Image (cartoon, rainbow, N blue to C red; front, side, top):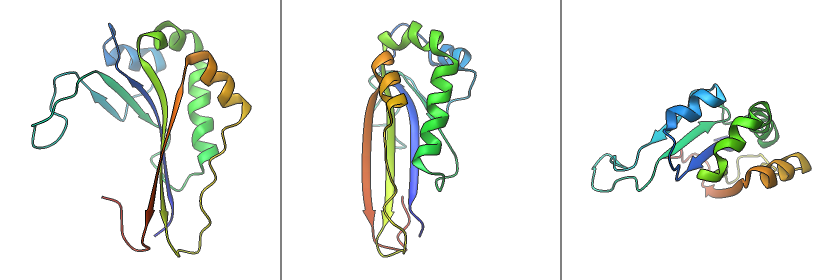
Length: 142
């Protein structure tokens, strides 16, 4: 298995703004929308406690962290005024999941947050979340 990088721009705990408004302001379709009170899983026993909007930087998980991060930062910069208008009413987050497969001949993917990221993170109060999954080679993610 090849190492995988999944980078997403997320807006959590959105207050006073429907997720569709974020879609309209940013001009991109979200990968996922969560609505407060809707079932969180297939069993329906847990519900979302808040609204959320998630956009995947790339459907191709082999694209480098740097390239995916650039896509997110380009989107934020292109819609700076719109993001500023609502980012104080939610929790903006850059969420990264890395699946690193042991003994697959690849090095661990690089995750480097440059000064461009730091400037925008400061401007939008953008959090960063990194989840690292070390997997035996050949075991696909669930």
